[in-house]
Image 1: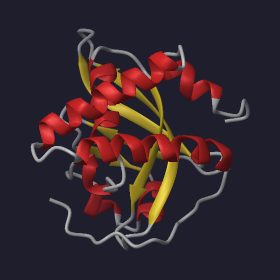
Image 2 (image 1 turned 45 degrees about the vertical axis):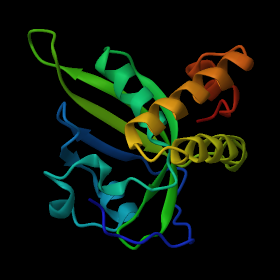
Image 3 (image 1 turned 30 degrees about the vertical axis):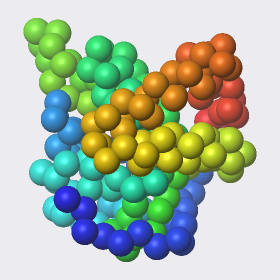
Length: 177
């Protein structure tokens, strides 16, 4: 369990930097580049062998991660906006591209994630949606039921917009990302 207290201060990184990490199929970090370590405020050895959730910010709705894990577990790539938390408690937003990694037999053996600095307008669009999803999740004392309720709200929101998650993300993402 993460014992870091969030602080309302944002960390940023350059638009020409890319955060890269690799995990095993359980989400345990097997590789972290220098940019990841720097932005997250950890040393590489503090990240390796830890669950990727070490940088999970409590403002992120769990249902978004459910969607991400379900999608990459099915062998598909995902693009998503994620609010992460550094070791200092500061937050940082990323535009993530997560893909499965395959072994020689064609089985998923891990995941690769490249994350870029997101466009501010995209964050302004996604943040209120994430707040609504999180609020829905928090209505339930049972976290699993809350996550499912949040997921159903996400599905309903996308249905109302007549878009898949990928289509929605692409509509709020500038073409230069």
